[in-house]
Image 1: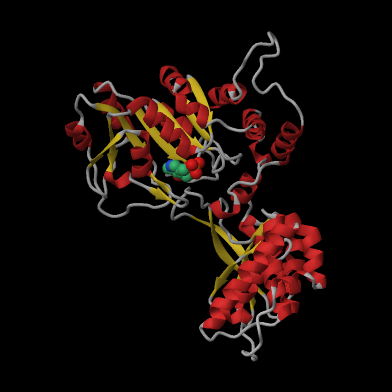
Image 2: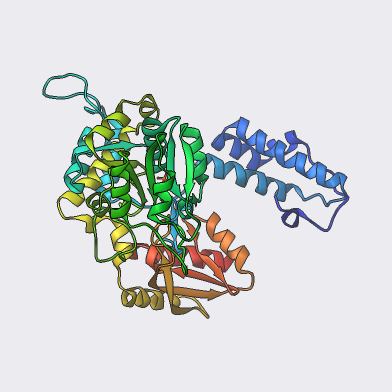
Length: 456
Ligand SMILES: *Cc1c(COP(=O)(O)O)cnc(C)c1O
């Protein structure tokens, strides 16, 4: 709790007892709603913080403030994950769950969740099957790879590939590609956990074919290329082209694994050319390509691998693979998403709407919303793809801008509201980027904003 929130004029008030708080009307109501253990826990935690602060001379808040704070905490943990209107302008916001699923995929996941399914049996024979075989067949069809494998996320895909192909051996990576991605994904650490030895080649800004060539020896098991998906090295730079890297790897008789990150399946007009596509990476000579399911593929969290059949089979048979397998709801959602791609219906994915909607349409929505609030304006802005894709590449967008006396407080209230709204605070104003808001949510967004503005 923030001290400011709880500070009152009366600092000589005594700290109420737990039982006194539990027997108030809100205390009793919360106990019924959220369960006694949790309510007791949050009240105890709040009281002990207050006692510590009081011992240091801090003010003691009144009973209603204590209850409101503690019971708010209990309610948030009880209701858990909450729907959010994402007005941040970051399309693949990892904190907000990356890509929203298309209706079909969400329905498929819900059905798989509440029914039995032929998850791991072959219906023809009744014998044991593999849970990801259909998704993998779709991936093979979509990418032209010999085989494919689905695991829990891209970090898991890399861990598995490194463990299966390079344990106790050396893996060459360019220094310019030793990436860290938000959420504790650090390539050197994954490498260490897999048992593979990282050999850094080249420098941060320049790596040449000869750098790889000189590092290759009898212990080399793999060359790894990683798409630097959340940054760009600009200026005096050199990256070894995929074709050259592939030639080097094959001369040395080691596979080339390319972590393209975002999972852009093919070259689509909405996405600029620097973002590697899976099909291009395979055609360009990568033996294995790894990518996420919930970035530019627009599906559920998953790690996808496509490439040479012999390598995929080694990964599939590795004991770690069993620990990285996906849940049946993920299988169902992923299959549904891949079917949309396979039948030319990727535009049903919310992600592609967000990426492709025109700035003019966004601006007219922003203007319509601005008329609802006194002093609000609409302006052009810039959204980003996020989630480790299209770094440094802005998407022309439109924003609703509302000046309020204390924008940080208002933004916090918006986040805590229902529906929860995430916006930006920029130069003393609340900024709502509409590229990441589905048009059908404009009314709900307006209501959520009005509610908070009326309170403050
Ligand atoms: C996002 C990303 C990862 C991590 O993928 P997760 O699916 O989040 O585990 C790994 N490598 C690259 C290049 C990425 O962009």
